[in-house]
Amino acid sequence: MNLVPLPDVQPEEGGPAPDRLLSGDPRFTTWNAYESADGKRFAGTWRCTPGAWRIVYDEWEYCEVLEGVGVITHSDGRRWTLKAGDRFVLEPGFTGSWEVVKTMVKRYVVVL
Image (cartoon, rainbow, N blue to C red; front, side, top):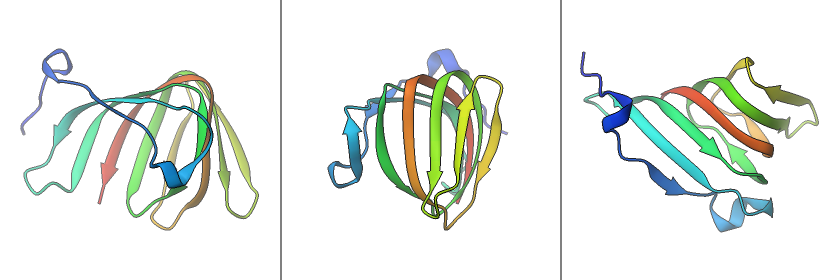
């Protein structure tokens, strides 16, 4: 197993693609602490400032919210408000929107 200690990980900065932005100016900071040799599995920590964007998932993602508040809305109208302590999975094929209401920090595991 090849684990990278989080303090040694250089953060990546970014945001949603302009064509997916719905509101605000959400800014992402991602500390990807693990990537498998085949590039199909990732784990780390993600932080995002307030804003909203459309999401389309082609992968599995397990998340644990550490701080903040957000709302995920499925394209069929179902909504989930997320806060510290909440855990959830997004599956391939999930479409909708992600809104960060109060700056969020989450741990994630992604499997392509």
